[in-house]
Image (tube, rainbow, N blue to C red; front, side, top):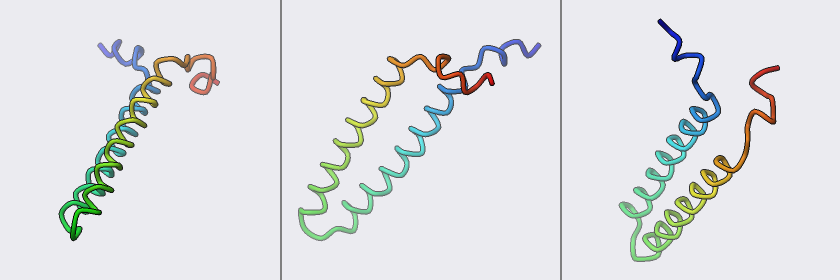
Amino acid sequence: MFSFLTNINLSAIALIIVLIVFAINAFFIVYHLTRFGIGTAPKIIALIFVVGCMFMVLIIIALYVGLTFPSFNFLNP
């Protein structure tokens, strides 16, 4: 009945949760910089921040795909 629970990749779920929390925090920072900032400087900073966030997320995903987590053996002591 619960055989699908044995095939769950916990490291992938943890990565997804971290990326979701990161995206929400990045959204709040960008929203406040563009909404409450006066002039164009906060908007330029927000643009640089968003591009940097997207670049970091792509690097994280590339590293995750390239690494083999079972070799770390932290889930099966």
